[in-house]
Length: 292
Image (cartoon, rainbow, N blue to C red):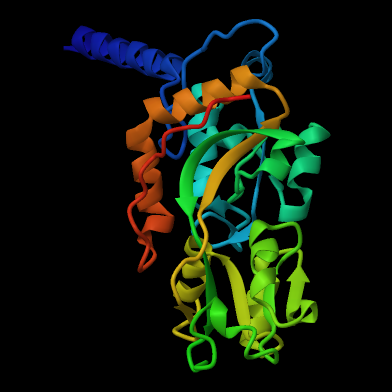
């Protein structure tokens, strides 16, 4: 009997060693590749060899990238970044997160402060002059958020007729530019560095409207205890991409392939984050654009 116990204990020890060597997951269950091999000199090889990854994201956007009181980040962009890191053999706990406000995203990529940015980052031609985008991995649309008692604003067309209704967005963002044709006067637009400040200003009546992508606004509405609502229909299409160094085609193609190969994890990531918000439509991975 004692010999059998010893044999059983030995078998358990071998099994434990085997499992730890597999490297098939991290603490939060994200799939992590075991000792992946990449072409020498590529970004993938460099990051994998370093054993850590530097990722830029938003810290103030419920459902996409929100830093909690415990210091932990949660959201769809965060989970998408973990999927990509996992394919490089990087566990979630070995990702170094950098807050990436809209106006700083290109700069953070160009300076090498981050390896990539996943931060509700709309793909557009102006940004493509400075960086390369992988994706898109999601398509949102711009909309308006107001206080629940606001009856003056039912959509962007009402803004010119109500110049007293201040509109808030974020410096360097696509929504800040795309709302301008709807305004009565440039001074009607108020800009901050992060959307949290817009939501707080709406709550205290310093502004009457907040505009950005609908999925971001839905997150603020869900946390407002019915104080906020969305009005009108979405009036733009905002394809979100992963920002990387200009011309890094191989890394771009790797990211696109990784998301396609892990579509089930992508779908789960949405369902566990932004997809929980009332009114959020199911996410479908779009066909990626050619890398350049």
